[in-house]
View 1: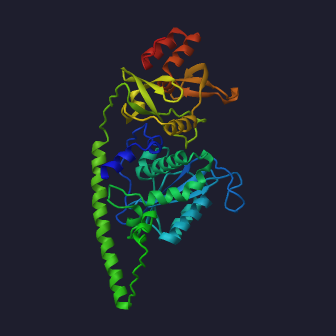
View 2 (view 1 turned 90 degrees about the horizontal axis):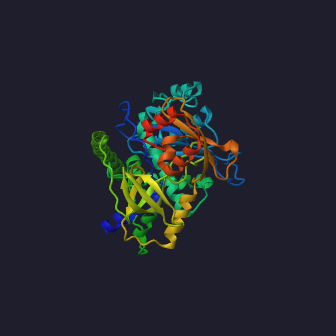
View 3 (view 1 turned 90 degrees about the vertical axis):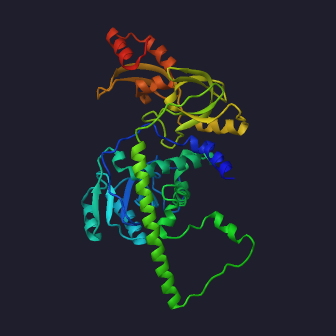
Length: 426
């Protein structure tokens, strides 16, 4: 059964096409970590995108929710999420007070230096509560890797649920309670428990809990006198102390192992007939954040040439060249491609996927990191053209890029630079 469950999870299409990980950030150093639940609290805003109308319940923003404030306990990874329409110091303070009145006041807060976090309102709140403040490096989310990992988990889980239920991306706010509960009750291998259990010292009651009473037998409820109650509380305190110590040891061990393995990585090898997931190239300004990061499965139809494979769309048969760095194995050639699988592929492929109509211009990037190309998207107006890194377009559609560059009257200098920097000859 254990093997069957692992195989099922590994081939969960909704999980695979929602995973991310195109960049491996290198941290500047260790951030502060808690030794017990409730000691250190991380928080940050996640820009999700506008939500749809929620009805006249008095809780929705006038223009819909846009952000998600994610607060997370450091040791347990217990998360608390609040949708908001904007990022302000007042909203941040209000939601932090909600955490404090329910779960207690932390000793340390950790956030970046955005204006809604570093201001006089927050200074006053910190002094009133006696909280120490730690800031991470601006515009460098990996300097607070604990919070950044949770953000990725939130986005990944939302993507998976949206895909599974075939919901519109604007429905994300309706899923926040379910996503928060799922993350807090998910088993974590790094400390062999759930965030809920570590935070509160007891197992969460989930849908599986009802199986225990399926026989119809009444629950056995003990009546405790004052002596028994006092002894029970002492047992709970001692058990939690041992649990927290064990978890801290496991967390420290896993962090050391992750740091040691951070620089390792091998390119995978695929054979013709394999089915793979293809990483979507995100287009700045037009690709929704909750659209699938991985689309597929695609079928490998040609072997690698300089780490480039030919993969085929299982719905319309279209073939494109994709670099191996943007491929992830899904199944071998024995996969049964059902109509339901094609429907899932079409749904994930259609969200955030835009067809390029033409490339209109080329120019150097402002930071001197290479070239940008101006892309006209099929179905979009002229004022919606975007400038995209040439390397991204080449990874996504190399033949199309070469074809469009040939139409331009580029100088010999630009052609030589493109050949030198990108290895593109046209």
